[in-house]
Image (cartoon, rainbow over all chains, first blue to last red; front, side, top):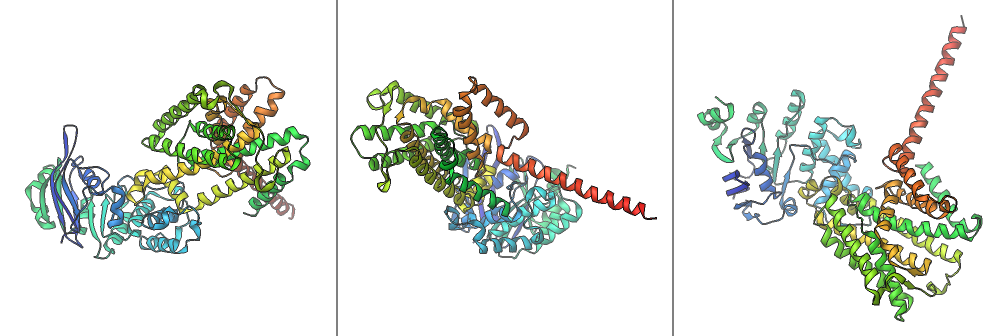
Length: 245
Length: 332
């Protein structure tokens, strides 16, 4: 059974077909890379998969369950987590509070108006573990406002990892990072165990290619090429669309 | 932390002993007013401060609770039934508010709550068979909770103080709780909260209900204090005034709304005795607050205090450095 199946998915904004009959089949444990030029509909595809946008037609299945009509907020509970291309964190809080919120989102405790959140030590400990995985354990108590851009990228990933997802959607996790930071992020992504299926959007080909096993090339909302790394790189259409010559 | 504790204990002692040092009954009554308006402001702060949902119709809810008391007492029911009706009525109206206005956030939320508040004001004004229209409803007497008569200003003050402290404690517990943290999360990043598995609408709905409860409680205290309710108590100005209490004191802080309530009530009741154009003075005060400390009085004062201390600390260390340097120079 596939971890994530997208079939005949369509989404238009007015007359613009942002997602046009997209089919995607990601096996459990796979590392899938989605590439494509600007405006190819990569992030829109993610927003459809996570339910932030409703598709016009087509279906999405997670481990065989049709989740097309499942509200966005239920999908994390079914094992789906995502990061954002544009960093979307809680700016007034500490790093550990950000990660605690991610943990709390999947816990029944989130409805509790009476207990003190700081007394829930297991939450804090799990948060620190997630931060340790991205190498931020020693600055866990720092306010987010005092962190660098590269650190925030890693907080994004830590929040997704903290939820122990089965399918992890990474939207340009390397965007805006320096070469050193990119290497750090790449290492931590490589360390994610195989029981997590990863779908990643990335512009940065040199780091991303190394990571991916299979690659899907999107162009004007359509899947143009799909196959193994070698197949897609060798395909003339990839050169034409993606490299522009 | 310990300094905060000292300030807190000092404030508590001051409030408990207030009838013994406050000169005259008039000022004691002003203190009671500040306390029940503070409960109102605490309630609005849940939404406007912690939830990022600015309501301009809360005086309508406040009014419904107050009218419920007036109507039920007039109809011959006892105080417990009247109070229960007021709280349930206030919460039910809040639920209706929430269902209608939570379709939007930001300006949309403000406009819908404003419209709902105005509808309730219109009903209070026109539905004369229930509300008495412009003449309002007069109350006769206050309840006797647990056998205590609260007719005297001192007894009423203590009743209000107890309710106020309970309200404050409930807000303090709420903002530290997971639900409170989730509410602030929906204020800062609603999209992310959904992606993390939170039901953003439901979180906001429960926040509305908590806010509605505190608002209804303050409406009950208000009507027992004034012994009279008329449409004036729930017009747009009343809604705006409470919002100004929250914003001037510091939205999204625990003590800000209380300080804001004190500021507005003192200017409105006390200073207005000396200055005829007290509205203008209040406006000027708000302008000064917005310019000097846009985050509100409580967080603003804390910030300026820290800044002053840091400067003083830097000056002191520079002084010792200079002294050390001059000593070193003097030696050879």
